[in-house]
Image 1 (tube, each protein chain N blue to C red):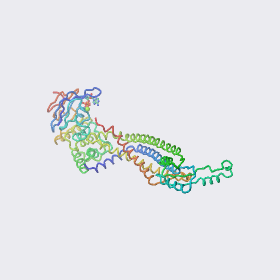
Image 2: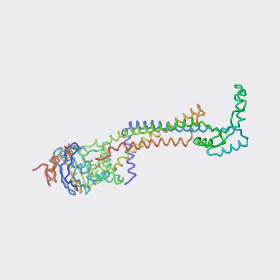
Image 3: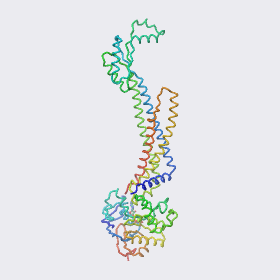
Image 4: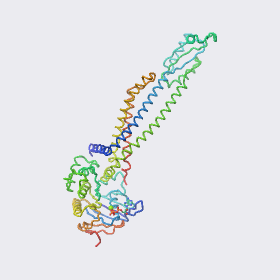
Length: 296
Length: 227
Ligand SMILES: Nc1ncnc2c1ncn2[C@@H]1O[C@H](COP(=O)(O)OP(=O)(O)OP(=O)(O)O)[C@@H](O)[C@H]1O
Ligand SMILES: [Mg+2]
């Protein structure tokens, strides 16, 4: 057994196979490219959406109210206690007097408050910033259990809705990508099958002179890999170019949207896309020749 | 070398191609298989290299129970049996040399061995000069010689030839038969099916006749038809 000769044989046979029906091979590469590009855009969309959501969540604060009067010392003590809680990043204190002052300032002229209420109706407020949005509900629950705090508010409903939305998109996308994968697989299988049928005599003779199933299969698997790799590389080239251009446009049109530009994450996505093409081609090549390998 | 015990073959469509065949062919024998069209000659040969399986009975080739081996073992059975067809089955996009070498490549033989054995086989059949030709540039006889070279290139103990002269003129047919005889004298067991009366009568070999799937005659130094 000389494996180097075998590998050389497989590769030459695979290239012969592509050369035998170049048009179909081009079509297959094109289709793989299109599917993988869609797939890649989808992945990029999902990571960007995730980025937007966590950006939004980061802006969400907890607001804790204390109705009774607080001496500055008690307030400072409570502030310290809150900031030591798990998951809490920063606590800012707004005394009821401060709040009343700024409130009156904001509404001066529009509304004569002193005519409606003589006393300060606002509570003392602690604005609590959490480390990450996932712990928000838990921190809120812990704080609301503290006897010193009268009420805790946060826009948990909005956060839940946004998260739900992202989950739905992820699931739909997953199903979509799966369908896309199988559609592409079908096309790759059928393309290679055309070259398989053109080589039916070759395969018959290979079997006749004692080639094993895997030996017969390798050239077709390699042919599939070549198609998949070509499609994958083209898709990555397309994705890279258009993502950079698109990200630049979005960033300048909507500066508040956090566009993903982390090179590591992006490269990871591009490599996944290319690998996906390779695997797709490999499976396609493998399946395409299966029926003919079966012996009587 | 070849043994069939109570072998019958009924195809799925109900055709009884072989019925209760008992046949023994010894090491290094040369045997003609004769009989009218549809008698079951091709079917019998296909049983030997497991392109078909018997409905009942036992097929033994070179001590291997062909009807019992697993599918993964079939390739290794076939490396011991060279097969030659009436319609050659050469690969049209490959040269004579490549067609013969192909049979070695697909068994994973090392490069140096491929060259040496391929040249030896071409030498034996007298096709060295045409090594670089493509099949469509060859005469029928040359195609058949290429096909024989491919069948024997890895030196199998058994050579099956199914109507190897079916498409050839009388003189070329004789050349091919002499070639098969030469291979037989190199200690290869040879089984040849044929309709060619002159050749069978002229070669004076063992003749097995089948008709309607049954062996009707088995004769040393036999003739094409009953005397
Ligand atoms: N795959 C098959 N399915 C069904 N019937 C078959 C099959 N192969 C052969 N037969 C039938 O089996 C019988 C024997 O066929 P076979 O090819 O063995 O004959 P043969 O002796 O080789 O004939 P010829 O001299 O014409 O080549 C025929 O009746 C044929 O129609
Ligand atoms: Mg026949």
